[in-house]
Image (cartoon, rainbow, N blue to C red; front, side, top):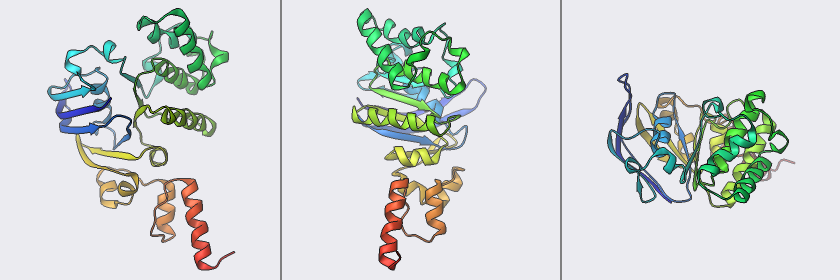
Length: 273
């Protein structure tokens, strides 16, 4: 299922223009990161894709659906969206009811709903909290409850808004494991993120935005080795890229594994032990 954003413009009621003639093609199975400073238009794009906003000019297509012709509730069959702040979307009295809400509205059987709830809770290590009230949980746990609720919909496209914000090391690792399974399943993921280390590690395509327009659409290595682009979009390169630059390396490793491999190769070339 592909997504197509065609010459879309959008202005909020207060007069702030969020998007200016933006076009973006996202093929089926894509893993794409939207990056840029606050107000660049990233979240507006996400909300347009899932139908929470409607384009004022241009068109957004999700598969063969024009989003103007379908409600957000119907689009939820194709797109699951996890907000940056989980408190903006959690409303049920228990974790179990929260995760079951979407599948129940799809009209699934009781057995299928229960299977999806159990599977999503297990994936995110929430099984022991199914009877807890979401607002009694920690911020990290609430974030994962929102993610479990989105995952229970089994939509082809999962949109994550700042997924690593507020997460500690173990929680980020749990998120990585979750995403690794989605990649193996062939799911499509779009993430909005200020975490460039996470972006460099997880995504093969990075779209850089500023002032409602796309400045670049390229692979992470190209984006993070372009100082002028990073400056224009008020972004910092990932830590490993900055370290490689300081070491004078011609290559820009994006993951710890790639950095270690590059370091080992350079030591062999230099004759170091």
